[in-house]
Image 1: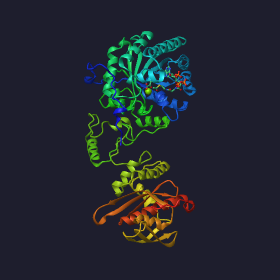
Image 2 (image 1 turned 135 degrees about the vertical axis):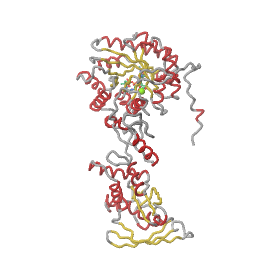
Image 3 (image 1 turned 180 degrees about the horizontal axis):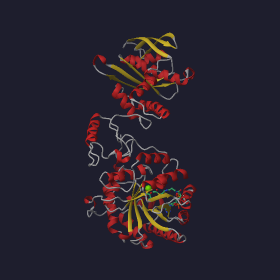
Image 4 (image 1 turned 45 degrees about the vertical axis):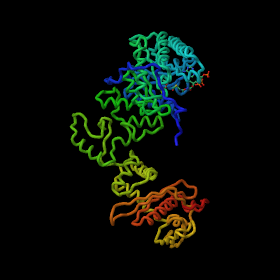
Length: 570
Ligand SMILES: CC(=O)SCCNC(=O)CCNC(=O)[C@H](O)C(C)(C)COP(=O)(O)OP(=O)(O)OC[C@H]1O[C@@H](n2cnc3c(N)ncnc32)[C@H](O)[C@@H]1OP(=O)(O)O
Ligand SMILES: CC(C)C(=O)C(=O)O
Ligand SMILES: [Mg+2]
């Protein structure tokens, strides 16, 4: 039961005064923002294993190919890898003329010096300075007054200018972030930014970037939009400023926050591909860009081979993209339910090549992203468990429990990886039969007889006499238990424990059969599944137990079972 949150959490209200002057709700997004990828910095700093120079380079080149013109390449004063990577880009002339690299730094003179050194020599480079301005940070992290925090930003800006002056060969740009803008009093964020403007002296020809991060997303996107519009309408020298937003996704609404912020006056968006980044991630640039695309606005980024981009991001981040991720997930152009398949099939049949897109259920033409819609589920090395279980269910009536779906899809994956080919529905069933239903050796059930006696002592309500073929030898065994399955398991005298059980009917009327899935632990082994199908539900469950036992023995040998010390009962 969740405890009462009202004492521990209070609703966040950015404004003390009313902000009903807002105009953004009636605005529309008519053009793309300036995109800035922070994959190699904010994305990288959130990874379990930060990228090597090789991975960073691969990511950088893919970003260039995609059309990014502003790329935050790292935090060079933080690590030698980041420093070396930035130097490599500069020294090996790897930065296209129209691309600006960006390097982040805290407002500390020695870090600024090293950051500028890292990027010096690039044709165009931007130094990005941040310091947290929100009340909690002023109090907890810095123990500073408002004026002192403002001074950190002003001093940092001066140090950046001094260091840049030592390297006139580079066309320098400047970005300042009042970090944690999302929970900073708007008037104070405004005051700090105006103070930075005074020092930097931007012009309409050479603008400064003020980045307004939702370092931690604190409220609904409409309030973030209010905060952005507040800045947009009050910043001094607005014509010399690029307003940038940098939403994080703590509340799951980073995309909406960025979109409303654009309506509220933001010119630029910082984020990561597929939403990687600290905690729940940075705003997903791909989703933002393709949301624009579906409104008929070219985002200026090329995702026409989105799978290729995804492969690169997954390789570099060493993190998977979710199967339901907008536009790119494995399952987003797959319909499992019949009515969706029917409508999509009809829509695709009626869609004319150059006409406005109006296929039901598909907000975008998969072909625009280099993808296809598979009306019939197909299974290949790119397929997940969804397609495999869909086929078993549709064509054989087998509704696999989720963990079995995962276990079996690994077996399929091994085949598709080995052959590199698509597997047909028949192949899937054959493999399922081989792995589970047909696993009848060394233990095979010949016959059994169960008797139930509700008045018997606990643990003896059911008795079983069963005959087995074990490695070609007949064996008669008996056991007792509180249920038919436990009596059966006890009769085996093996350290078998049932950890999960599912059953369902297949078909109707006289054709009805029962399918039973058991997840079994043998001794201290990891759990594995067994499956049985029979006209009789009890027999199906016994077959399922033996299927799991036989799978274990075939994989580990009888010795492993004998060595198991833990004796368990169902
Ligand atoms: C929201 C963001 O994503 S911000 C970016 C965060 N990214 C990273 O931190 C990744 C890279 N960072 C690092 O590797 C390290 O933090 C380094 C190398 C930059 C600095 O390391 P350290 O010198 O050990 O300092 P550390 O990061 O722990 O910061 C603590 C000190 O810096 C001060 N500090 C923190 N942020 C800033 C800032 N933006 N400007 C100036 N001082 C700052 C803190 O108040 C603290 O000071 P104290 O030691 O006097 O209490
Ligand atoms: C450094 C800043 C821009 C940041 O990443 C954040 O505030 O989230
Ligand atoms: Mg961030």
